[in-house]
Amino acid sequence: SNPNYLDMHQKYLQRLLKEVPLDGIMVDDMCNYAGPTVCGCKYCRERFQKEYGQNIPLFGETNFWGDTSKEILDWGNYENPVFRDWLRMKVDAVTDHLKMIKTTMGEKSLMTCCSNTGPLILNALSLDLEKLAPYLDFFVLENVGTNVQNVNWVKMDAEALLQKDIAAERGNRPAMALSYTIYEAGAYFGWALSRFWGVGNWSSTLNARLAEDPPDAMEQEAVISKSNNWEKQFSDLHYNNGKDLEEVRLGYSRDWKVNGGSNAAGNEQWEDVAAGSGE
Image 1 (spheres, one colour):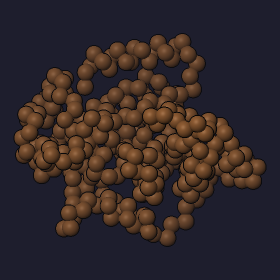
Image 2 (tube, one colour):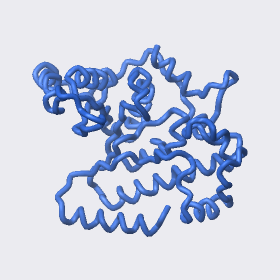
Image 3 (cartoon, helix red, strand yellow):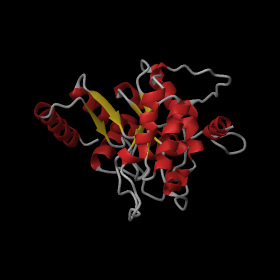
Image 4 (cartoon, rainbow, N blue to C red):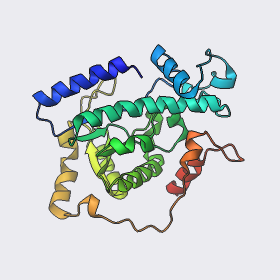
């Protein structure tokens, strides 16, 4: 929310676009991994007061912050409308940043590293694809999720399909799945998932994500080459030309997410959607 920072960033982008012949830009995750307590700078406080007429309470006030003995991404009292407003303002700050980048770039393509949506936990990250969508030319689902526990990629199925639907609503813009691996089997799995979802595949060249890479770790061009070359030789079907044959469609209400809604069993709606997709 710092206008001085946004102005500085915009001037940097303007200079970059003049000096470097770029076709597009990928900005890293347009979200906030530090949780709902960030940011509490003077600019965010002023914005919250100006736009919502509210002040950020002191940390520990359970009526606003909820049970802070939980994991940080589970903090917050959704029954308090002021807390929900706080989450909305944080998303708006991220969206304003992306809007500034797209406005500065003009016709050049823009994508973010991560643009998924659905689960309630993403509110704490200020990640809301529906808000970012008008400024994106590519839609990238980062298969790894929020932490190493997301190694069960099946749970990402619902998020991938929702992201694909949002991309389709934006003029059938390209959607792709982003995977990380250092072995051929992992690259093949990521490629196969992308094709199963009917989206493009991106095997990331960002290595060194482990404390120490094993001696048999491979470069991305080596781990993905067999899958890509097979596809070039035997399949000329562009993923964007495929057509889904739906037998069942799962209903999802974004209002449940942004307002922290849950059913009688205490489950968020997304849990039911993801379970249905997994089946």
